[in-house]
Length: 308
Ligand SMILES: NC(=O)c1ccc[n+]([C@@H]2O[C@H](COP(=O)([O-])OP(=O)(O)OC[C@H]3O[C@@H](n4cnc5c(N)ncnc54)[C@H](O)[C@@H]3O)[C@@H](O)[C@H]2O)c1
Ligand SMILES: O=C(O)C[C@H](O)C(=O)O
Image: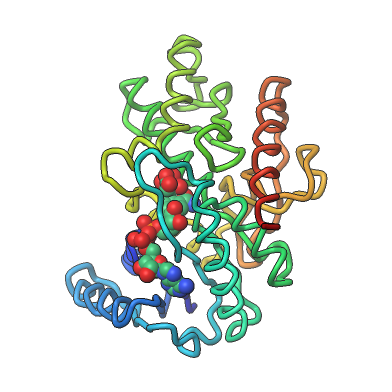
């Protein structure tokens, strides 16, 4: 199993590290445009192999995509992150060209690859990869919901004063400060609805804290987060590489599911060796459906900017 990670920055390096530590891939190739940067990150990570006990071979490459040939999975993290006060959508002007160029380079050397898009604004960048590559729709996956759901669980556990392993919850919708739809109604602690323990007001606070999870960290760090994003990507890569048939909320191209079409947005999917093997349609109530519609409208508006 060969995995390419494009972008050796914060998220790319973090995801390469988690993939290696989980020890399921034979090879990880990291690519960047900065001279020797990916090679340096790869060497540093390889020097953790004996300490962390993994056999994954990690190599780096400056712009040379021939080294990525025959990758099974490629992760696109190349592009600029936001600074405090910015939205993810403001990154489209720089990141769209980068994602377009990078995905073409990946496919040239790995025509059967499955691509995981991370660069922001992620739902629109995922849509762009669909529009420009011609890969089958099951092979293009946007990562956002897995991260947002991890943040939701963190906030739920905090509110419930419970260990995180006790709680479950999912975030669907667009990966944006306003567009996320944390499914508070379905959140649980050991199969008991979280609403049995928390007031509606407290649950709404959990949802609001979740939605601004990325912005909160960006304000604290001066740039956007990388540990949880890297771990979330590694979870998606492992589910595909190991044919796990796990359910994650991912940005998928919709064709009528959830009464939406012609865009990529976060919905629950089953991930296995064929990438998105199924889009799972769960029954939403009227309020949740309305939030999904509003979120989709916002994503479509950002997609419209691609034409410029
Ligand atoms: N979807 C998510 O949940 C999620 C989570 C975190 C970050 N992100 C996004 O991921 C992206 C990367 O974030 P980061 O913190 O790693 O940024 P970073 O600046 O640390 O790293 C980005 C790297 O991309 C490289 N790069 C730029 N253009 C390139 C090109 N054409 N080819 C190859 N490499 C290129 C840069 O040299 C840099 O090393 C940002 O757009 C950020 O918003 C998304
Ligand atoms: O917040 C960001 O801009 C990066 C990423 O999308 C995140 O949610 O951490």
